[in-house]
Length: 85
Image (spheres, rainbow, N blue to C red):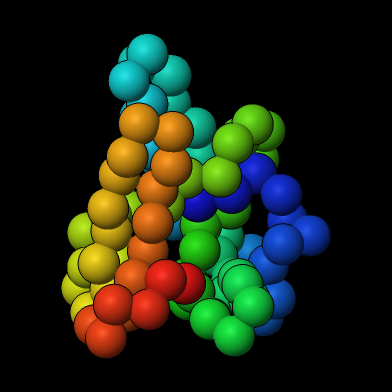
């Protein structure tokens, strides 16, 4: 999920519903696109206008056979061979 439309390719304007954040703020999901991150393509990334930080779904990464690990000040994403992405 991103508030930066410039990060997305193949963008489709389509109201996808709303998202509620931890502070009970509700924002509209205005569409989706793909995000190219090096040699990785992340598909169906939602666009939420005004979102100040990029957010990702740990579950979506895990469903794509990626491993997500957190440390005190870092987050690592690895493929099934253990290669850091």
